Image (cartoon, rainbow, N blue to C red; front, side):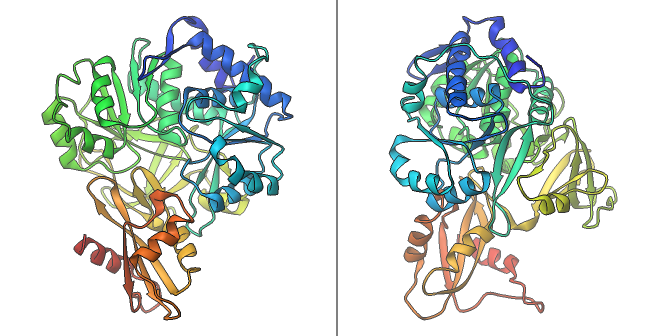
Length: 503
């Protein structure tokens, strides 16, 4: 066994106190660390028995259950590459991911099996397993009688542990390749920065198909041997009820807005809490201030991305500044212009980073990978930033028109590519506008070609049938033409003004 496999690092904490509760569900169901060890071993044995070999991909599109987490651990144990897919993705999206990643194993919800089997067969997926929201399925039945021990596969620090797909500005999603060392180094940095201890209790209400819920929250808990109160989703009443039994809570800004809307939420609910963190979308200053006034706790805002995990964080002991994302974690940072030249003090530029947390590159996209890295190894994040007079980093905008809605990244070009194929649509443009709950809402502008009748309802229905719900426009404008500059580029800043004025 080698410590270069991320699972081996976790396992040291699991075996140190095997009878300790690792997961507790809201209904009182508990899983000890000994059960985590045994069940993930059975899953690993099943994956290997299916023919999967180290380096093969395992695509996963399933609901949030403890068993889903143990499947992730089983992939690490057996040297496989974990590929989580948002449960909201529709057939067209899954088709692309499977054909691009060519997984040897796909795990899906039994309800989706008929729909997804044709896509999986087309992508030559050799094994399909199922797991439902109750923790039942062929993954469970086929592994039930397999050994509950498994020898962890040795991995080099540069070997892949996971691939996370991020939406591409050209409509083609990119698979960010994350190594065992990328994930391990970032988790260790967070445990240190946020003062995790063995007696912490993490209240977990995030989804587990992206960085925040899986790699940030759970990795911190695993590295510290913590108990996790594991909720299948964010339910306001449940979170308020469970907070007094917890010490750490991680959420997106939407969670905090909703907590503040609950009349029973206040200092009593937070009596044992030591840390609230926020990320995945900008936290409004008024939310930060109201939360502090109501609870006595200052939310710790941090900043990260799929390609690097967590990049910066407000301090645990020092002042947490509203509207900022603090200081660099354990990576180098610089703010540069489009040519990679560092900008002057206090000036706005594109954040570039370098460190052990920064991903290996984009899956099967060597040219894209090369274009996103400078010659000296710095990765170009594409986020517009500046350092304030107080020395804290601030995200002031995003290049490439990225929209963050409810904590999920939405790239306009992907939606536009589908809308432009809709009958009656000549061309389209997607922008984001501020939204009090989601952070940003997706807004569509479409130009009709007069071949068929289109309106807001038909456009929304068309997109809803193609893409995940968080990408579906909340508002649609049918316009005569799109505003353009002298070079013919659509002036999205003008469209944003229209969207904001009519919100």
